[in-house]
Amino acid sequence: MRLAQKGVPVVPTHFLLPGKSYDPAIFEGVNDIVVKPSISAGAVDTARYEGKQRARAIEHAQMLLSQNRGVMVQPYLPLIERGERALIFFSGSFSHAIKKQPLLTDSGVIDNERIPHQGVEPYRPTNAEILVAQAALEAIPSPHKPLFARVDLVLDHNASPVILELELIEPNLFLQSDPEGLIRFKQAVLERIR
Image (cartoon, rainbow, N blue to C red; front, side, top):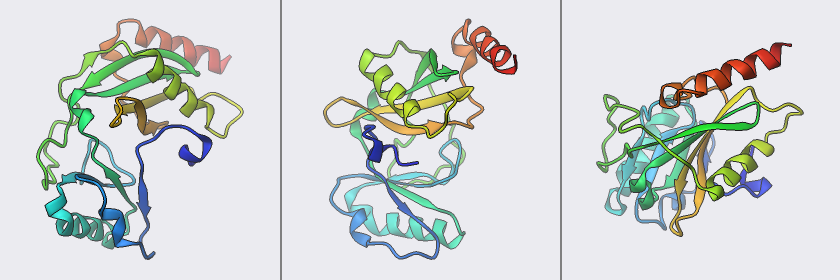
């Protein structure tokens, strides 16, 4: 699904596929870039690279491609230092949100031992963040709202929310961060099976 093609603001992303050629220029033009597998969890095999580390970023992408894994190349958005937001929805309705500290604090480091969700705290999203998250959910090509969804947001250079990830099969819904979250999830499941 291409959220950007449906007008949803997203982090600009280049997708590289095993066995397919790509333009090395995608690694140019921004200060820092992020290289990560298309399928992953907890930032495994993910790293940020500064401009002077372009060769290492390309090596990282090539390593993933040689393992027959898709690769995502994105600009590193500095305002992620204000925290990554995760908005959780049940049956299309907003339930709760958290904010967590950024993970890629050291450039050029693939740290698969890092704690994936550092500094998690309850968060009250702005109206703009809720609207962007809802736009992502509306773009899902299905007649039914997903039972659960997590929309991960960061702020772009203009401090506007953009989609970092849309998680539709993510098990971490941060239910421990909102006492009512589990109740809302239970209600959504019961309504779905009726």
